[in-house]
Length: 112
Image (tube, rainbow, N blue to C red; front, side, top):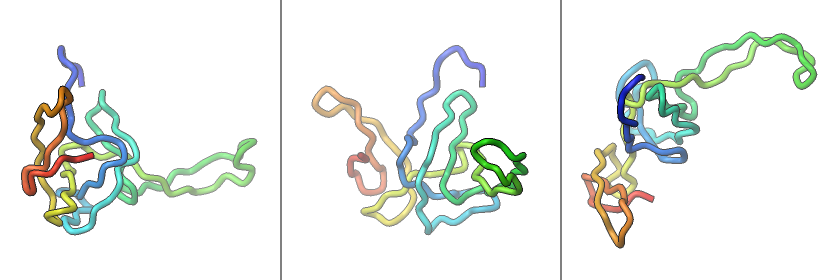
């Protein structure tokens, strides 16, 4: 993703999100974000987009074999989970006490 300006995303590491499109779509089950890859606009979500990886034996892993790991998905395929409303929500940004905070549009609560 080559752009002149750095994009700003509303999702951060540790947030609870729901997958809204794709094979693992489930709008009722919140999952945790493990990593946000800014330059590729992708997120690594716990238990979503599981792939099988074939590994060779090494010093750390003497056996090798087939390992199941999460692969990144597009950041546009997830929505932030609003715990108060119990549903996915969009995000607004507001300035409070000199800091810009994220606010859930459904309930109006500040996202920590």
